[in-house]
Image (cartoon, rainbow, N blue to C red; front, top):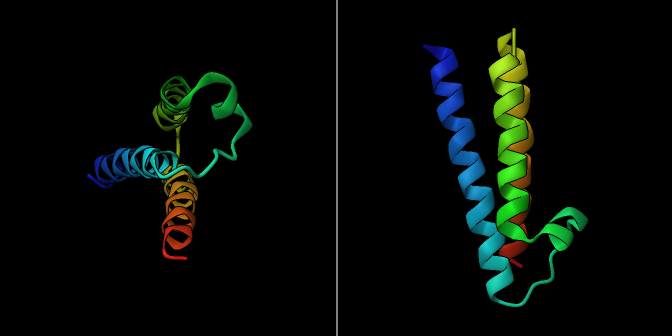
Length: 85
């Protein structure tokens, strides 16, 4: 059960990352990620999603899923803090 909850949380964090990136781009904030600059937002986020899904699928221990959720929580938190400035 915990694994399913972590996977749902990871999906919500991925979605939040995508939405916040679109919001920043819509108001003219330049993208800082060179991969997104090269590929574009959609393809880069899909590639990132595929990588994260692969890591989550192969995660043998729950701490790996916690680490992925922690990483994306930090990414989304930094974006929301930057939006408040």
